[in-house]
Image (cartoon, rainbow, N blue to C red; front, side):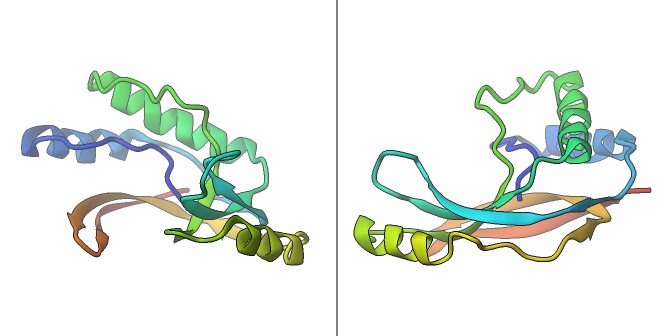
Length: 141
């Protein structure tokens, strides 16, 4: 799940980001995965996702992360935040196959789990897709 996409930054700014995220203070909280869908809506699907039930602690954590990044003059995200976990990237998936899958799993949910921290990731793009690596972990209280 992405709290905030940052984009490409140089090494100096990356170190500052890693440092200021240590200022984020939040308590751990429960989260529930529920519902399936795809992005972009009403267009050719590119991403299959599982949704996250609306959670005030999650939204507050995102706002705290964003505030630290704005402090570093990284502009806030302009898109509306849609908490989700990407399950798959889709290529040439027939819409009928996807809608049948979504219909057959309309009641999808998993047991609630406890969010105990967040991570700063780096990504390296390769011909086979992105490789994500945890750079720093930040525990929640």
